[in-house]
Image (cartoon, rainbow, N blue to C red; front, side, top):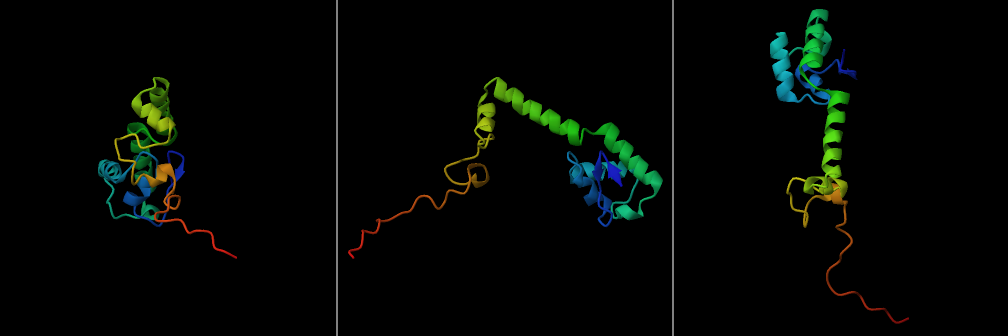
Length: 128
């Protein structure tokens, strides 16, 4: 089954499989399935053609997903960079932009630099 240009896995429950689409989390997937009147425990391979069409229509009509959402998010970040806001400069420097501390933590953004600084005395040169 394809939704918004994404292949959805057949062996998983529909609730989990819908989260493979960018922009749909577990809460949104649950709401979509309730609107389509599909049981939450149904596997993707067990869906009827009618149920697939209902789910596909609900996702594509009512939710911004995949390319459109990615484009919107990147344009929002670009706008923040262009107006040189604080958040925009943090994005440009690839640092956390939501107030997290950076003295410790934030290793994913700053890189793993734990092994750079060593503590204690440096060993003196040995005589040969």
